[in-house]
Amino acid sequence: MNRRTLGRLAAAFLALSLGVLPLARAADEGPDVLIKRLSDDVLGQLKNDKAVQSGNIQAVSAIVDAKIMPHVNFQRMTASAVGPAWRQATPDQQARLQAEFKTLLLRTYAGALTQVADETINVKPLRAQPTDTDVVVRTEVRGRGDPIQLDYRLEKTDGGWKIYNLNVLGVWLVETYRSQFAQEVNARGIDGLIASLEQRNKANAAGVAKKG
Image (cartoon, rainbow, N blue to C red; front, side, top):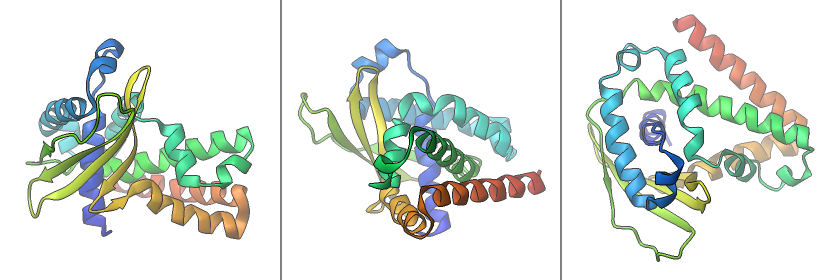
């Protein structure tokens, strides 16, 4: 997956996730309806946001940090990305892994939001039963260049549907990170993975500071 594709993937993912719903409404809304409405609403907002258009990464990161979590089961996403080693980690290590992974995603993807231009999202018919609690919502991102297949895996919770994985062009995000993290754990253990994430986050933060 090249950087341009990953950037467009990130833009769509975060654009979708930036809206906040009242809990009662979110709980009643179907997963495909939720994704379609949020996509349309938030992409429209981003295209008119002066801070986003000016490339203010810090401002975008703050928005993502405040808005994305209500729509993502981030603990499940982190546990899945870490893989079997998650169950061997102490509660403190799990908390640190989740915090560093969250920071990594925020820093990696916030920049993609500054590139939102003419993208639209077409949500395909949902292939699921009304009683299903785990579904895949398939979409297509249309804009400059060829359309991009973008699928969301969601689970039903008491607070509504939550995203816990993302697929672009046949590649699941969590599985991509799981492969990277497994190499770190095998070589240096859980603490080694945490240290590696901390180092990557510091490098990303330094890069943003230089651009600012």
